[in-house]
Structures are given as C-alpha cells and as structure tokens.
Amino acid sequence: MASDITMYVLEGCPYCEAVTDRLEEAGIDYEREEVPALHSGRDEVKRVSGQRAVPVLIDESHGVTMAESENILEYVERTLA
Image (cartoon, rainbow, N blue to C red; front, side, top):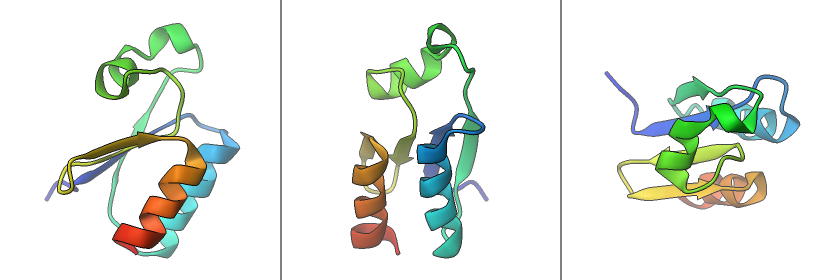
C-alpha cells in the first residue's frame, strides 16, 4: 500500500534527516524520494513544490505541500503524530 506522505530529501542533509527521523519516531509511513545534490537536477521537486530546496513534504490526504524543515516538523507534530 502506498503512503499518502512523500518526502523529498537529500542524503546527508541534516534538515532532511531531522524530519525523516521525526516521522520514523512517530511511526508515520512515508515514501522517500532521494534528490540529486545539484539543484539543477531537482526538476521533480520544482514541479511539485515550486522550488528546488529540500526537504519537501507532500501529504496527499490533506492536500498539503510544504518546505522548510521547521514548518514540516511543526506540521508533523500538529497534524500527523
């Protein structure tokens, strides 16, 4: 079964790791999409979020797409955990 949550992350990104660690601690299933290190290779992230920075969370069940790790962590605590 596919998850409603998709996380666009970069391997080794501390902001991405903070968010994925929190999702895992809360037992929230999510799809992990690794992005290229070069911003110019992040066309899919740009298409779904309007920008190329990560992390980006997409919650299809709530119709939410958001960036910025602090915002995502707050959303996880308030809505998902």
